[in-house]
Length: 288
Image (cartoon, rainbow, N blue to C red):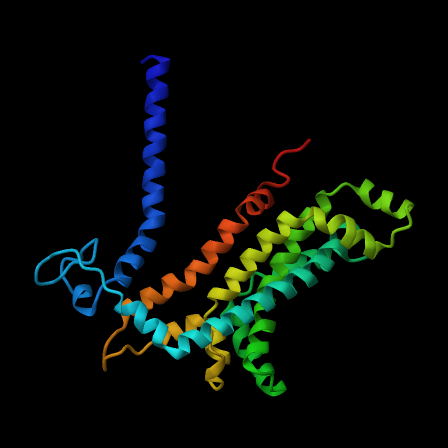
C-alpha cells in the first residue's frame, strides 16, 4: 500500500467517523424539530416518519398547532420571563463574585490559599439532591421568595465552577503586569478591574455562558422552590407541567415545540460569542 493510498484511506475514515459523530449529536435535536411540527395523529403513526406526513394521504404536512399552543399558554410566557431573570442574575452574580475570588486566589498571597481552592472545588462534587432538603428547609425558615431562592441556590454550583476556572486564567497572567501597575501607583483593586480583568474576557464569556445554560435548564430546584409560588415557575417546570389542549392528552408535540423555542436563545448566545468561547477554551493550551 502506497503512502498516498494510506493517506486517502485515513481521510475517508476520518470523515466517516466525523459523520457518525455529527449524526449522533444532531439527531435528537432534529427529531425534536420533526416532532414539534406533527399533530397528535401524526405522532401516533407507526412506524414513525422522519418528516411530518398526513396519516391518510402520506403527503408531507407540517403543522404549526404545537407552536400556537405554546404561545397561547400564559404560563409559558411567564416562565420565559422568570427563567431570564433567574439565569441572568445567577450569571452576573457568579461572574462578579467569582472574578474577585479568582483574582485573590490566583494573584494574591495569603495563608490557606491552596486549601481554600480545593474546598471550592469540593463544593462542586455534591449532587443537587444531597443538599436540596436542607437548603429548602433553610429557605422556608427565612421566608425567601421563590425567585431569589433559586438565584441563591443556583450559585452553589455555578460560583465554585466560575471561581475555579477563572483562577487558572488569573494565574496564567504575567506577574509583571501587577508589578508594573504597582510601580505606577495603582491599588490592587485598580489593577484588578483596569488591567487584569479585561485580559480575562474570553474566560468571562465562557464561564458566564456555561453558568447561564446551567441556570436556564435547571429543573429540580426550580420545581421544589415553586411548589407554593406557582407564578415564579421557570420554563423547564412549566414544560413539565404542560397539560395539553385536550383532556387526557400527552402534549408531546407542545413539549417539543417549547424545547425548540427555549433552545433558540442559547444558540444565539453561542453564535454571538463563539470567537470568545474558542479563545476561552484554548487559552493556555500553547505556551510562548
